[in-house]
Image (tube, rainbow, N blue to C red; front, side):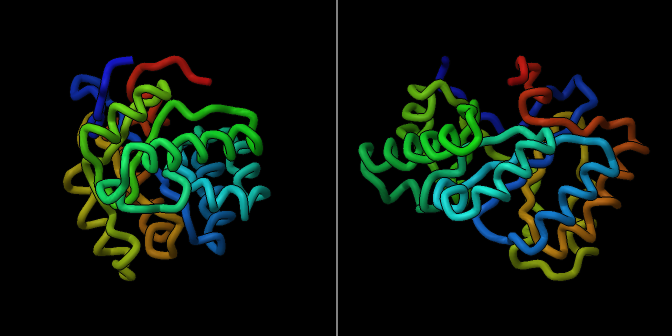
Length: 201
């Protein structure tokens, strides 16, 4: 696999993705899964390895609901501060935990905080994983007013957008409006694999 960093899908294809990074926020996960079920859409959930170890039942619920699973490192570090060996361990240890609990190997990695360098991309590629970033950020970890999230995201939606979100109260409140706007604009919401025209699991 080539050493690829992806932060945008095909601008010629009317598809967008929401990537859900999960290292906390369990209290909102069931409501999030219910919204996605109601809208009959599947997203890509990037799971922290340590979180999967401590919340295997939630991870299995996400997987059983048909969502794609990505790797979000084991302990949510700033990857720029790590040695190559530590970067490798963060990625491979998470893959091991996900394989043990969910019986799959992720095809995608997203670095915590969006911090990365060429080493991170190359180590992920060595594990046959593409490194994924986002083109739009909800900032839902600090924005409590869902209208602020809507105003950040909706006007900028376009073909190939990758939107970062977490399981937070503000994102849950903003999500239906974002999904409705996408539908009204003729944008299909899909997993990262589908956005990139890759074969699914």
